[in-house]
Length: 228
Image (cartoon, rainbow, N blue to C red; front, side):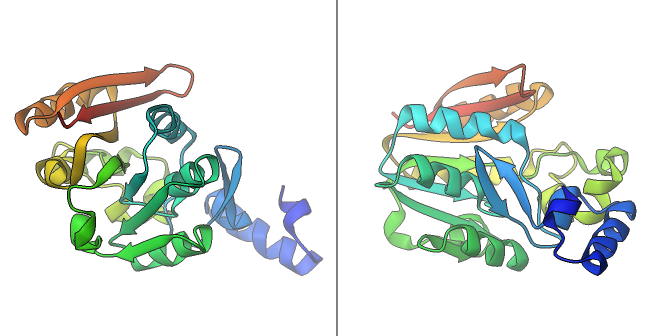
């Protein structure tokens, strides 16, 4: 892959040095494959995982006109949804400046905003969102040191660290989600098998009907909440 990507021997050598230093192959190449697309990646931006494709598939099966990718990182979820549903209004936002710049490259015709969760979104989206798609950080703080060095040393901490129990950002999202969802709208959050019950309980506590979906092949679990 590095040989194919390099335009000269010097560039290849530089890429090999970065890879040997532990930089994720996707950041070295400048792209990651996700839902059949090449998602452009900049150094230091969270690398989209294949397991997150479950969230995209579930969202596409539900359908929706107004779609928001919260905590968007590179914009992979938004880009994949827009590719399959070109008539949808797709919005994305992230608190990380580098991630927002990357997402704007992947969604050149999209609406990408910088800011903290819902504060970044246009106010007129309140109560209109059909699909709220969220891959918020959900690794417990104490578990960060146990992650592979590729993630721990080369991806932004705010894209990994979900607080003491890994659910801090999820709780903030869930608390405000009903105000932004349209009637019948869905909130989809990537989570883990261990944390899923707590995520579902948090959804139920704010009045969302909640259920889980998983894919053993992808090693993926998502929590789905619906506004009645």
